[in-house]
Length: 340
Image (cartoon, rainbow, N blue to C red; front, side, top):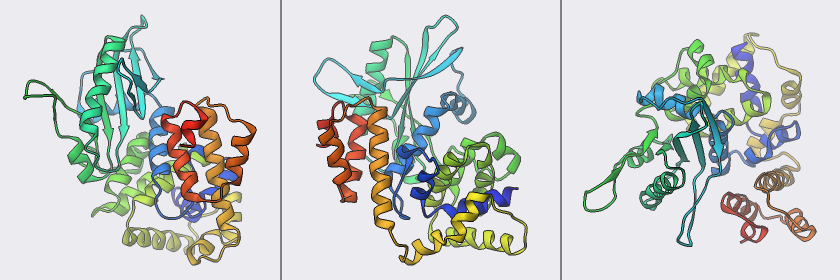
């Protein structure tokens, strides 16, 4: 069963847009084989958004923190406005409330793929604004799969003259364990995914990746495909080839069977066509996936589009422009912000 799931995902990795047609949430889409920030960023943030308990669970599991007693965890507005005319928007904000409904801790979560020195100034703002608005404790949690980025993000931020500091809590390779046991991966699947992204290229990379992919069966097929794509994108070529060779070996030995929709993708040669650059209609499929992703994100942000706006999106044939509009949605409050 584990090998079956892995084969299903390894075979479908090249065409997330095809999986979109089968119901994959467009906000998590990507359009090419090369890694795209939108997929990894939105996919990992959504992992925490759709399972709000994950963030406090990892704080206790990985950092051994004693959190205040709480009864519920909820995703809340991530726009952190304050009195001066500047808006800061975190990737995700989670409020932990006790059984009386009082906020006891606010978690500001950031997905960080690159070093951005401006964050040493904005992260303290996040904490200060949350504490002032909600009158509660607040922490910044940074998910950084890259070791160098994680090491940078974990540095204490001096607030001035050494009189105060902010310590981001970083979920990265140094703190995320190598999950190689299948039973553990089934129990802590989100942690296994983070482990594969963080350690997939290491000495035990193949075992870590196998464990994570084998546990994806607990998700529906759309989310499983997204998480597979995120893990696959994090792998360098040697590990990708090793993983594919293992899957082909298992297939040849007859140790795996394919669900119907995976078999359909295989028969149509989606993966092979993409690798060789010979698949007809790839470009239009890519553009459609980007347009759909943009429309889903805009709808989720509650932004109204006019008929002219919709026509503009459908007429756009430039992937880079569509990517820019998708990224703009994160902090947008109106259609003009999206198209800026």
